[in-house]
Image (tube, rainbow, N blue to C red; front, top):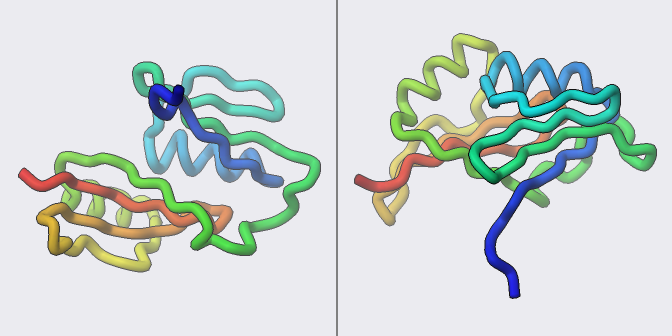
Length: 119
């Protein structure tokens, strides 16, 4: 019935700042840009941000949804993002299952995690 996850959308009222964050700070690969919607793409997966008339201001419940972003070197990615102004709420820590996790917010307050799978 469901074959996988093809993409995700984060709705915002500040598309400019969100685009700059994901394009310039996070270096997500841009697929397409429209006045009210930006698409980033890895293979068949699309990460989208767009404006929505029912979304105003920063997220009010950042814990409701958390995106995990794969990295093969969490410590270097963490340091690079810190140099670019990203403020982490959890530095890289190894989990009991062997992987590493570091947690931070985007400019709208959404929670994101770097995730390095165990070797």
